[in-house]
Image (cartoon, rainbow, N blue to C red; front, side, top):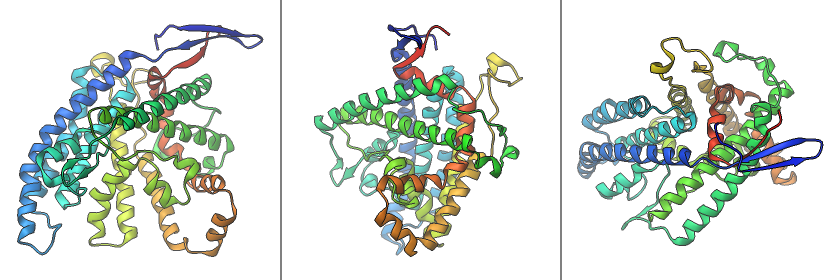
Length: 411
């Protein structure tokens, strides 16, 4: 972070501080990557419409099964489009010399979104009216948010929507800056912990350490504010070009009433949507609800492993073949998948016990925020299985370029 303070102030007895303004270069780079991702997705959307959606629509007219997939659609979808979505970020990062890990993250997300939406197309579970026209498919795949459609086409946005997202982005950006100003003083780790970065270092005993729990809770809140802030930014842009979208985050940590509510109706609804339509529903047509949910969580674990490889993809031209911190980091592969397997197990338990009297009693008599925190606490002990690679690298330091933050100057 090479920014210079735009404002300095002194607090008696506590030192001198400086306010760093958001980096315009960060946001321009982010916007450029999203535009390039939209162009790439447009090309894939044309292939998807020509070889997957149109043949499936023609086949469905003569078949009793609306969701029957042809061999051609499976070959094009899983053999061409999805592999192109997987490899595109690596080449883009290499040729564009992208070093900021947050921008790499969003670069990967944009490509990943198209891959899962291809699965929706293959199995016939695209949102209603998306497959009505090629233009609808292009718009649907062009943004890493989920636009709304009706029988006319993409539902137009209003200036009220634009104002709403811009205001909320400003508030969320300020809140994120203040929170990062607090966490950066401890390098985004409130307490030191002993667990190593590899899958073999995982310890359930460490999961019950209250220092680890405090770290996990602080980073869970940070991730929620991060995703909320970026979603408002992207929603503001898509609203400005005249498109209406679904919300991405609905305050899951403090307003969820159950695990299903947390993962299915509040946390990252864009990812939930393409996992539901691209994985859950296809599996559910042949297997149980629990099997479909488990498949969705496993898919989530696998794609987060892949996303880590994108975020931590090193610039070998600069560091050579020896990958070592701080120039580059090796992901702790397997930990993300283990985290989502844990949550799949919790969902299975919820399916089996959700009707129990004790849970109904708790929901009825406890304050909603306490219920939400109890829901969050089921995954909190193992949250570092997911967050560790982001905390131990400079991911959040790269991200703080986008926010106004306060730093101490006299250290």
